[in-house]
Image 1: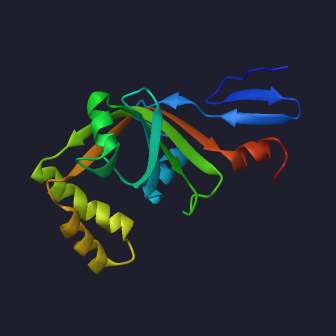
Image 2: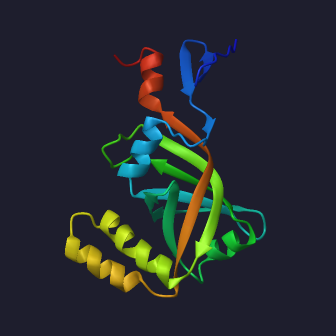
Length: 178
């Protein structure tokens, strides 16, 4: 038997296991988990649709600023061509490897802009490099200079829908954890 509950969560009972799924659209507010993940993590998986309609994905580094995920890609890459054809993509940020925790993630869908101005690159690459190489100021500076070229584009993903998931919370609700 499946039953539903309101509040910010949809509660689904599957026998003895209860699964919480927090589903909401961005309305200027994000839940705390999503904000933590986007602030602390620097790696995400992006997915797009290829010319023949097949899905494709890759893992990339990112920064979270101004309510957007900012990434980079080479101008000749397949994902840039796909995003030019259809800017709708999805992004998944996992807590794996960061202090937010392995059992947490957020899936998002939205639109991606391809930006190639020198002004945007000058703004983006120093921030991006500091996030990716946060333990080495010199390394981050060298990375920013090396990456800042016209062939390296900036991708700005603006989420339209987010779906955070917290397995720890779900396990606690199902009485698997204290």
